[in-house]
Image 1 (cartoon, rainbow, N blue to C red):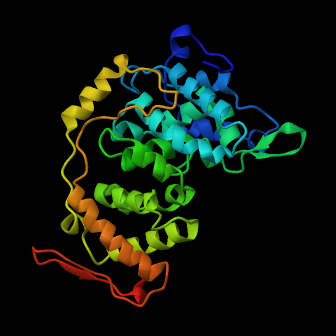
Image 2 (cartoon, helix red, strand yellow):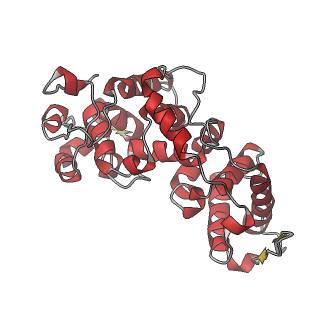
Image 3 (cartoon, rainbow, N blue to C red):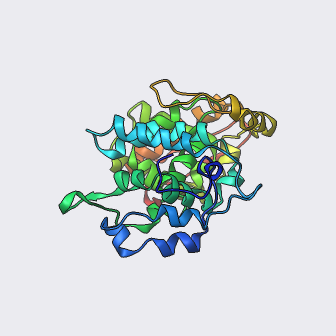
Length: 311
């Protein structure tokens, strides 16, 4: 693990919790401007390594992923690393959504395990070879802004059971991460997969098109219930827990092969198809300005419509 130091060899290999109050205080103007390093050694002394606070997972595996991402995308835009890193971070960390809601975990990864990665990914080159990270939230902030949290949640919400290929597609478009990810729309698995399908088929491609569709889909959701239009089966909690418990058997995942996520249930294809058709019509109205009224009907009697004027 490449940090400034730690209290014990055991803690050096563990992932702990770094309280928000401690993390924010350490993010001085000098640190954010790139004049000073993140005080990782001092912060480790304030981290919580108590049993049960955060599962005892090896920090060196996360460090390995960050090193590999920086190596692979050294000559490319750092944003290109998101699609590669997101599924591998999710596979390597293996936590529940409840655990992922703990900001202390992400603060620890960003400030005690890989602060140099945060600076590389989000920093802007300045004079004297320094990189300035303009937003403290990239180190310690909301789940949809924090460097590692946003990637983990993207992988969790856009994966199709064990299949991480939709995650690569979603994370290959920054507007999906910046707009769609933070909407409730992404919590509905068929809707998330429908957005990915439209990206894959190039129905939407540019940032403008993604944002327009996201706005239209969000507006439509105020007058329609996606769960009724495109029902989703509950994920299998036992399968997820088995996958988490098998972390000791996990292989390092820094290569070109996508790992496999938890086999806790794939999204129903009929539900995806229904929402793909619905979103295509929304895209036609919102993105391309076609004067048509998208309507989706189901045999059960659900008929939902929204005119372009309401987007």
